[in-house]
Amino acid sequence: MKLIIQIPCYNEEQHLPEALAHLPRQIEGIDTIEWLIINDGSSDRTVEVARACGVDHIVDLPVHVGLARGFMAGVQRALAEGADIIVNTDADNQYNADDIPKLIAPILSRRAQFVIGDRPIPELEHFSRWKRLLQRVGSGVVRLVSGTQVRDAPSGFRAFSREAALRMNVFDRYTYTLETLIEAGLSDVRITSVPIRVNGETRPSRLLRSNLDYVKRSMLSILRTFMVYKPLKSLFLLGLPPFLLGSALIVRWLVLFAQGTERAHVPSLVAAAVLIIFAALVWLAGLLGELFAINRRLLQDIQYMMRKEMTKEARAATEELDADAAPGDRKAAPSGGRPTHDGD
Image (cartoon, rainbow, N blue to C red; front, side, top):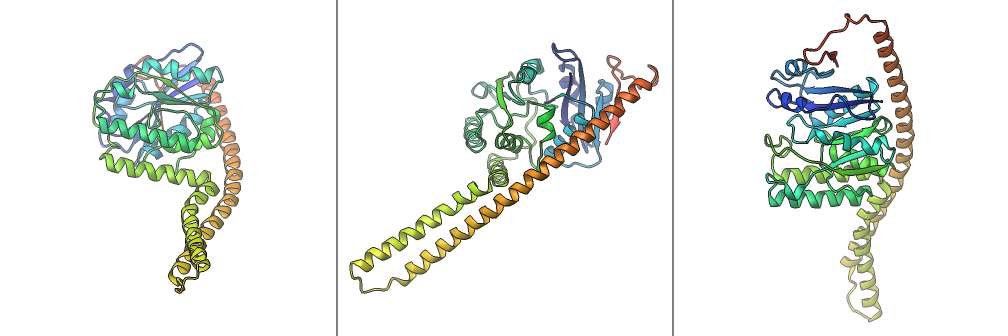
């Protein structure tokens, strides 16, 4: 059983050593633990610091592509390296790495495939009252949309099994946290959360430019993901208000006509017709979206099988190289004698 702990990094040379110093190398039930960082086009010495600290795998992206794409690049590399479980954490050491055994326990016991670390939000001093409210409301919306019971949807401290990772996709360029959770919930992946501890704020969030910007981006991500995975339901709900309003206008016209009104009330009839036609078109788009969703699921199954085969081949090639290589052939890392590999 191999665990790979991945850390997305963007100009983290100051905070990365402390974060890595707290990561475990041994956990009961895990045979091998390896560390992986995703260097998202950093302009500082993040890569050099990672090598000096004994990181096993480095995904070195040449330009800054954002947290979401960097996260997926790390997942793909971890799968290619033969990870059975992947843990994602942050480079600023805000999450307590001692809780990683607790985080992966539901996966080891086969109770879940996806585990979210639930932060003690009411106890976090650096969370303002407004930020706590946004977190509570946002997580509630995600629970409603995804059908899960996760209380801390934006938490980046999470673990997922190999099977869950093979089916994972991220289309949002802003962040992966909400989309992957909604996608997993709507795809019948077993999800749970466990309480975790935090080390406090070490630097301001780079994603949270402002509360308003965060709310806007999060809501767009939730709506887009829900429409992708539940097109008929989402478009039915979108078309329902204009249909009800148009129907009400028609009922009003019928009542007035029955009462012998002298006016034709043509504007009301026109407005009712426009609203009902709009609702019908939206619902038709929902039906077409449902057909496209069938094709999407078929393509995802094909993607899953291709990823599985590719990672099998990559794992077999790595094991063959490891078996053929002499002990002195591999590049020793400065810390703990761990091998270091560059790539991507």
